[in-house]
Length: 293
Image (cartoon, rainbow, N blue to C red):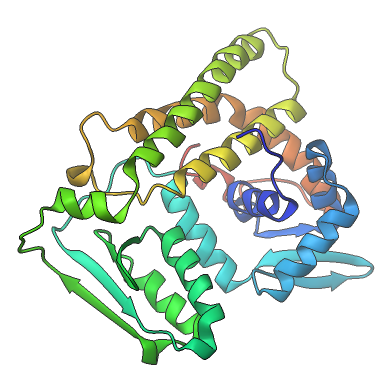
């Protein structure tokens, strides 16, 4: 958890946790300044932005000699999906059905297979058997987007089904996901984050944390929680072990996030507004629509 995040990954975190609530666009100069506390220089930021632009995650516009970057429709969908998992306040209710995706990608398109596996795993599917992926969650929209993005409709079958045995739902979970590994990741998150939360609660009460420090802490918190969360498929409560450790991690994340939120926003707004010469941060922006604020 202490490995330095990549520039690209941090940019995604900033879009998901801040920029999308401030009009979805940012000046490249502000983005560079926001990433300086994480030891990512201007060259690294520009290189990452260029790659994200070519991959259709972000779009750019020019205003004089200034470049501004906003999420594309594809980027907004990805951020919405991520936010739905990171900031989820209540577990999903299960309708008792399984969604099953089967594909047969030809050898000449084998590079797509690797990308497809990553996409399905990221979205919360588990690998039940070779080329057969399963989830109890309704991910129909995500599946349609993936099929369209990779143009693979002729190679994919997607079903909604019920389990009539002989294997139990618990066995399906065991065979499709490494629950022990997920638990280990949450245990690590709790071990490291609980101590930091307690220390920073005291520092904030004593006025010993700057807005900039709170911004760095909140961004790192979201980044590392997101990394832990995205190996967790977000299974409905009915399919989870009793006293699921993910619930403890989610509560700690929310509690820590809330104490950092206001000063972190203040720092972000100070840097963000430099890109707009006549702009004030006001109610026109959706920052207070944030699910944790």
